[in-house]
Image (cartoon, rainbow, N blue to C red; front, side):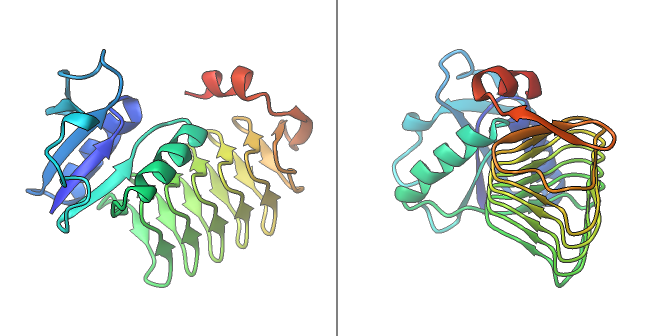
Length: 220
C-alpha cells in the first residue's frame, strides 16, 4: 500500500508519524502545492509537487490518500477536488488510540494517539480526532470537523461539518455543535451551539458569529 499525504505543514508532519506507527513498512509520500515546501524533508519524507507525481499514482488501486490541512475549510475543499479526480481516501488510527468495534471511522479521517472512540460513535470523512480526545458512545463527528487535544464529550453529542472544538473542551451529553462553529479552549458546553457561531467560557456562551478571516488564523 502507498499512502499519499496531501499537505506538508504541521498537520501533514504529524500524520506522517502516525502513519509510520499505524502502517509500518508501507510507502509514504507527501505532496504540497506551496513551492516553498517542495523539496523539504518532513518526518523523513521528501515533499513533492502534487502535479509532479507520476501519472496515476493518486488514483492507483494500491494508493490511499489523506488530506492533512489544519484549516477545516481548506481540508474539505481539497478533499472535494480530489474526490472529483477519483482518488481513494484512507482512514488512519494510531495504534495507541482505542476505537470500539461498533464505531465507524470514515475514509480520510485521522485518529491521533491516545484518543478514545466509543461504542457506535461515528467519525466523519476527513475529520481529525486529536491526541487524547474522548468521543463517547453514539456521538457523531461531522465531515471535516476537528477535535483538539484533550477535549471530551458525553454520549450522543453531535459535532457538525467543519466545526472546530478547541483544546480541553468538555461537552455535555446530547449537545449539538453546529456546522462551522468554533468552541474556544477550556469551554464547558451544556447547551447547543448554533451553526457558524463562536462559543466559549464556563459554562460556554455564544458570543458572536465566526469570522473566518479573523478566527481561523488564530487556531492553526
